[in-house]
Length: 314
Image (cartoon, rainbow, N blue to C red; front, side):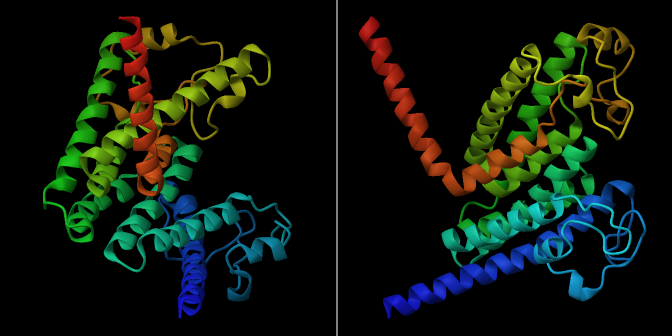
């Protein structure tokens, strides 16, 4: 019976991965079309260059990209490996959620939040934009679903959303006051509110902590890479909009921002050395869901070690 149960568990994990990869295929459509204002349901999937529609038999997640060897069958335009990557990540999300929570409301909450975060991550990386069409509705979904999924007070998700939004808004405001430069866009504030609605107050704080640490580490790596000549700052600029040149300093940005308002988010353009924060918030949220206890244990261990070290000095 135990072996049969384990066998069924593996089958359901595989089924969850397949379902997730199918959702990932849809997320690829969302990532490509939502920033352009196009419909995500019509027309059918097509090559972005020659617009050749992809038949159903060639629209199989992951496998289609391998069968076509990463090229459009009609015009041979290379197909970005991002497409199978999103499908694999979403499949892994669904399989991991089943492995940890089984078929439950908790799993539903995790896959809904995770799917939204995957779409937001790649849109933010492509366009430096976090669409309200995803983050705002999912704040409501998370706040409603969390009490039923985890048997917590009805206001838990609302507190998490408000806490996260208030914290990042404060950081954004302080950065503006001190530097006259926007440290982050309003999309990040709305994103952490969405995450907070799903993970609650404690999960929100852990998400911000993980995002800040990982973002800082990557920032240090980028700075070191520039100093060692591994890459140039001009190549770091996003390709979708007008941004400041590599020669323009942060001081120049601050000077040009003197007469702008913090609320003029539509006019915000990232500095070439800037890094989108949305993907780090997504990483922090999923880290909390899947390895949150390990992170708490590591923090406790470090805290105890520091406390003992300080005590030894006194």
